Length: 221
View 1 (tube, rainbow, N blue to C red):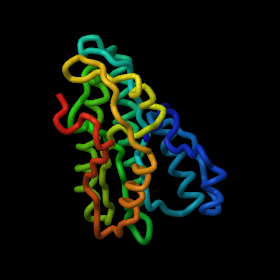
View 2: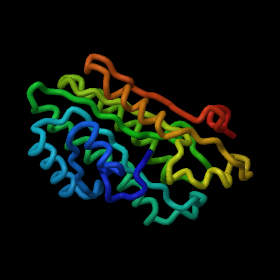
View 3: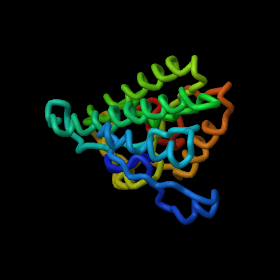
């Protein structure tokens, strides 16, 4: 479910279909690693809608698989900038709007990963940033309580997207072997996020883990 590029914070691949469903859609391209770009994004939202009720922090990248001693500083920084700093900057922008709007409050949903629980081999940048997103989720939940701002996280395993295309050919396992892994329809993730988003602010899904049933997550290794 994650965007494969750092430059897109909000991407609608089927704009015509969405517009047909809701009447209008505002598409804003922004670099989530750039504070000025994120500020412009939320200014556009404020100008167009006057308030913000939901933020889904979805932008994320994989970097090339490498043992931790072979990870380049460039790849490490790219992961931190997109997966963590991007989520932080967008959370700040949303939090500021939700805190001051009337009626105040709103919901922030972070896209974590099963890697926030159990990493894959040769994935230190991704695993570290997804663990950090969990900390951001907890801190945002706590800071948001006085302002009716709810924050939750969905941790996804093997949704069928461009980022998991290679799983059919095989994925490195903890024992070093390469094995195929099952995937699930990304529609199920969308339905889960929709459920989280549709709750009243008096209720919150703090953490949800959604995986392909037979993927090697429980008992991985």
